[in-house]
Amino acid sequence: MASVSTRYALVGLLIAVIAIVAIAYLYLGGGGYGGQETTSPGEEATGAGGSTVVKVELYEWGIKIDKTMFKAGEKVVFEVVNKGSYTHAFEIENDDIGFEVETKNLAPGESTKLEVVFPQPGEYEVYCPIDGHRDFGMEALITVSG
Ligand SMILES: [Cu+2]
Image (cartoon, rainbow, N blue to C red):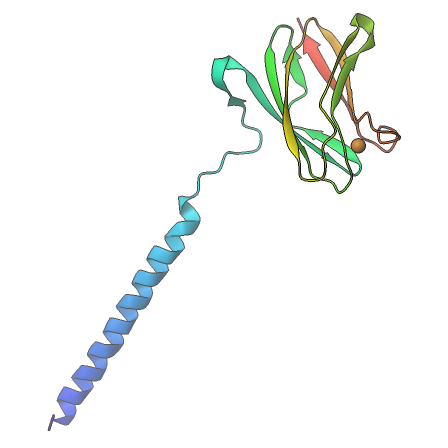
C-alpha cells in the first residue's frame, strides 16, 4: 500500500507527463503552419528561359493582373485563371500595330498560359472577348516601354 506522499508524487508525475505530451503535440502540430513557404504578392517570379511570369485572374466583373508594365522584346508568360462562375477568356490587343493574342475560352476554375513577346512599345488593351464582358469591366491596360 503506497503512502499518501507517494500517491501525490505519482499524481504529480502523471500531470507532468500529460503536460509534456500536450506541449510536444502543440509544437509538432503547430509546426505545420509555419512549414509552408509563401511568396509575397508583389514578388516577380522568373520562369525557365528568363521569361517573366505574370498571374492573371478573371472574375465577374474584372481582370486582375499582377504586373502591367513591360519592355518591348520581353518574354512574358501570363498564367490566366478563371476565378469566376462564367466562362471567360483573356485577350491582348494593340490595333495600331495589328497585334492580337488570346487564350481559349476558360470554364470556371480552368486555367491556361499565354506566352507573349511584346513587339514594340505602346499601350496594349487587355480584355475578355466574350460578349458584353468588356463593358461590364473586364478590361485593363498594359504599357510596354522601349
Ligand atoms: Cu468574361
